[in-house]
Length: 168
Image (cartoon, rainbow, N blue to C red):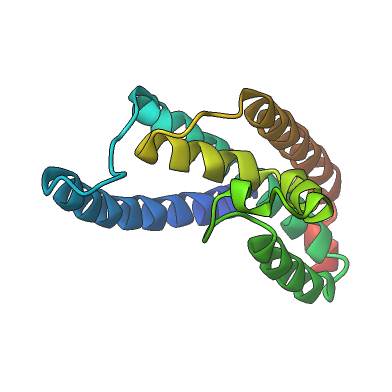
């Protein structure tokens, strides 16, 4: 019986996407409550309709990264530990808690944050919800990075797929 091996990483990505959508729904309820209460600074922009594209960009980056890492960890088992540490470091190098503008006084740290491909996606999401300007060049960088990672992941996966049974 033929089982397409790409189904496993794709199913993991879809599972994470469903979890994210549930969390986003919870956030939207809270956001709607504060917006209806007239809270200051809670004014959505028209770019809120671009949210599905931002979620898709984030999901494709996660899928490409997952395919690439899963392909490589079949041969190099310890890579999983290194990737876990790297993901944690990338989380701290992203503007989840505070906007990027707060880092303008520390240029080297701002540059480091901007190298993270998730930074433009996070900033664009924040811009859509709170009316900040969107960094289009940053989004182009994130989309290009995502495309390269996804294609590289598929290329490595197809190359390593033939020897999965021998290694595992």
